[in-house]
Image (cartoon, rainbow over all chains, first blue to last red; front, side):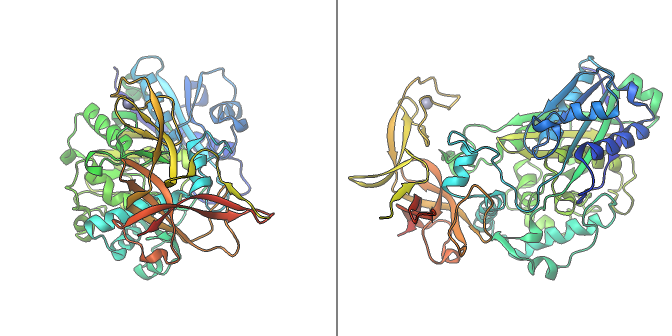
Length: 393
Length: 139
Ligand SMILES: [Zn+2]
């Protein structure tokens, strides 16, 4: 396997852009990434794209084809990857493997999404054989309620308070003030968060991520090409994709087994993170900061524990001690996270790569993690999909 | 005359012994399935056969949440909207199943309480028929 570098970063802002097409937004992100890398469109040898759930792609998730058509049909191979909200990172992993495996020297990874208004429908089909459709029609458990169930379990087990949940949202927005790409780059007070509407008890509106339009792109290449382009490349130390295990304690359909001890959660995320860290040859102590999928504040508590960074039940203490701020011992989501960006579902994994690389370049401005050398990114998607990446400088 | 129409056919039934979920179970490893599966999904199991099995009615609430705002489609509900509680229920026969909790006071329900399955209305259709599903009632 060859070394792979991230040499070009391109972000479109996250927000609501009713006058733009998803392809137009992806084009802006792509042009920014090409410019950042110092290359042209004709230098791109292959495209690995996230398939959008809600926009463009001719309804088939062919968003990679849309962007090639938009940029100029050079005849390059296109891979359109679908993995729920992990699609962006999944596409990154495929791009990474193509460069690492020697198939291509210069690859564009891109994702964009324009989201419908309000709370989204998780199942896209009315099909009584589709487990996600059955969950909704038989019980009615939209995303926020699923997160609420998980969060309530933690509260019962570890005594997490509603104030602690709110504190995580306040911390996220504090970081976002320094991020021009965030949808909400302003501070929220404890009163703002605790005063926001209850969406799914115990979770409030400002403790879950809204839906946004967004697009991001990165250019990755071989070490040889990277040396021609920059003296300070960011390296892909590890990249991994995983799916959930049969014994996972979170019921994916209507019913599932009760796992031994009842306690295996988010097994896909834990596997992807473990594999990416093993691939990178880094331990938890060597990871300087994490960008994780904070669809809800709950994930900032459970994920670092499930990945071996903290002991079970330690997260609330780490939060209260300020250890998850950009200058703390384990900064989490210095970007402001999904809470500040909102979720442009399939683009999220690529936005994380952009943030990790920005931090490793030391270009994080007011949200910079001091001396950041190794960063971990993680996304999770419907269907038991997860992806993780470790970048280093 | 209004009817009672199951939200999805063949997932639950009023049996002589009471309301039950109607699924299947692997004859080799005992893994339970709802909906019914003809094959076992357990990768550690070499079993080739499942048989019809009933699940419920007794269990424990593993955790729950309250749907405080009207849910998006395809969830059906009556007007005016009333928040409902739903959660994962650990049935005594080894299945963790999703279900609504049958209560007028969702805030009073705590993880860990004992519940029993009932069949009740999820919503009503235009003709006034009851759309029924399974729920769990605190005992
Ligand atoms: Zn079996």
